[in-house]
Amino acid sequence: MEDIVIKYRTKKPRLEDPIFIEGLSGVGDVGRLAAEYMIRKLNGKKLADIYSQFFAMPPLLIPGVKYERGVAELLKDELFYDEKNNLIILTGYYQGYRPENYYRYADKLLDLCDEFDVSRIFTLGGYTTGRYLKNPGVYVVTTSDELVEEMKKYGLKVGNSGNVFGVTGVLLGLGRERGKEVICLLGETHGAYPDPKGAKVVLEKLVEITNIELDLEEIKNESDKLDEEFERFMAERLKTEEKKEEFSYIG
Image 1: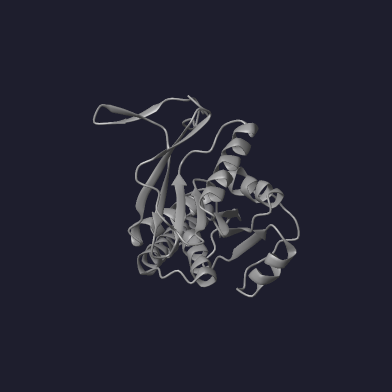
Image 2: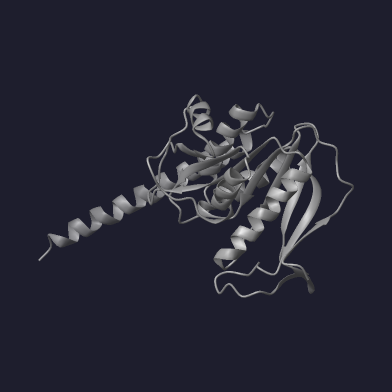
């Protein structure tokens, strides 16, 4: 088996200057949640499965298979496409478990972008805050000063310095070396749990930048539910703290 295999599941579609969107699992699962939401709402069609010797199952990061109803299948990421909006969307849980794996995977994805004459690449992920934010923002990292200035028009945050990990980040670095326009959108998130709020704000900015027609009502509702759950959690925590204070005065 080759290191990375892209197995097409349909005849390659004709897309006009398509946009490539990467949304793999990562911090707060922001990228994956955003990509899967887009695929579902746009009725994305299956383009291909991606298999790799580098894919491994957390937390031990040991290669293996998944199975459902007793039937095994290799670990895979998936590619979908949307002809109306000229999109190719990558989603999945797997990236690699050694540094060189990420580079080989990202390089393979850039080859695919060349094959489809992709005009722009967007990578989606989370920006760890370690705390819950009711109104998270979105950071941007790009491959040129000109793109940074363009993205500022959309109210995106630009950090002074930092790191972007995984395929989401390596696509930026290799994309720059290959002369690609790559834009990374990072939604602020606590980082400790799958976060629809982070995915929502990333999608809002992506839609604004690309003019994609996407119904965001469902993910907004999921975001509101998360707010309600957090408020209930804080209320219960406050009650617990008050009871502890009452007992501390006894005796």
